[in-house]
Image 1 (spheres, one colour):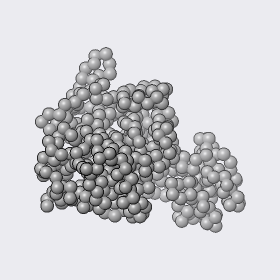
Image 2 (cartoon, helix red, strand yellow):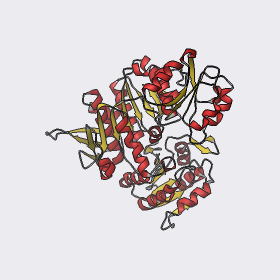
Image 3 (cartoon, one colour):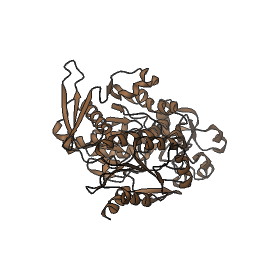
Image 4 (spheres, one colour):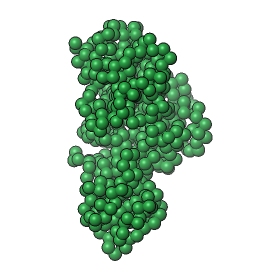
Amino acid sequence: MASPEKNSSIDISHAISLLKNKGLIKNQQFHSSSSKAGVIRTDSRMVEAGDIFIAYLGESIDSHNFIPAVVTKNPGLIIIEDDSFIKKLGDTPWVLVENSREAWSYLCAEANDFFNLDMIFIGVTGTNGKTSTVWIIKELLRQSQIPHISIGTLGIWTNDHFTESRHTSPDPDVLYPVLANAATQGIRLCVMEVSSHAMQQNKLSPIKFSASAFTSFSRDHLDLHGDMDSYLAAKLKFFTHLQSDNSYKLFHSSLFSIPTVSKLKTTNLNKYALGNNLSYVFEDGVSRLQIKSSDSSNKARTFNLPLLGSFLIENAAAAILLLESVLKTKIDPKFTMGIRPIPGRLELVSKQLPVVVVDYAHTPDAIEKSLQALRPFCSGNLWVVFGCGGNRDKGKRPLMAKAAEQFSDKVVVTSDNPRDEDPNDIIQEILVGFSDSSNVSIEADRKNAIESTISEAQKNDLILIAGKGHETYMEIKGEKLPFNDMEIAKAALRG
């Protein structure tokens, strides 16, 4: 597969007509007689004469500030969302839009012929559960030999070809070329994670989803959204703005305890949850999931799964129901035992003792659910090693401690992607959440924390290393340095 990051170009006059038809343009200075094809750019350093430069307010940089430098390069068009910069544009053609990222999405989609692709989309959102559900759908499609592309935290999989991705929901200059490339390979089915960031930034506006799931909702990303109501609104926007006609919508039953969700007005809304239409038992190393029929027969189908923990079983059920809704056929139960391990999701490190599991859990709710899932398999002490990411929602740090204290026997607090913060400052903010620190250890060096925990644990103990999961780096001061929980744990177990 070719590199997904291509230079997309579009006729400037056509680009403006498209944005106008979508109701995005608020004002403009443009003469169609001078229109030519321009390459779509968001990096001011890459702009050449005739290009289309899109300026937007980013999370750390406002690219409107680079407009004076861009103007000197004689671009064909500048797109802005902040009208205070109009005076700096001079005679350069420009359009003022409501949302530059949304404009970027539509232009990249059009430049890559997206609107002529015959492709079906399945989307999964939720604080926790997105990645596992998408992975399981991908695995079922793989075994069914149905051409597909999956996009999310674990990267981009075009059938069995893997491409790394920087974002859960890729930026438009990556996403739409990737989809166009997949279409040339005969792929007509895409499953993707839908992040609240993508919804806030309107990155996915051109896409209409035929099946969608909302797996869970708990505290996360408040550094971006500000409060829980805004965070929830971003999630629900997926179901009110990006759905095809009569799309299949699947919500975990727990979500309906939230008033805003219970009042949501939409068609074809379905529920799922253990204790509702799902049940399972764990026998002989296999989880046996039963899904009751939604019709009056109330018949149940059984699927054997190589997965551990109730929340992964629920994610598997969601994957099955979503896929069946678009394929219009039942999933063959023989495929579910062939699901490969979900990277960094309750992933067993090795068969050596003590048992060590790596998981991506990085929210209070995820820590709680992961520890609850592991408790039945632990006859000794249940350990958890975790930290909190820097430059992110500080309010969840003591809540992580509270969950760890409540659902484990021994806690080791360490570092986790400190970014621009001092790891020791983050640890101090975590420690506030413990009511009793007698079973809490502190080791800021994550490698040492993992190694010392494995060394100290007894053979019948179980250790959860939480927070980073599949990640192969530690993010410090703008650098991503090699770091892999799984490999460190394996080495420690080998002694």
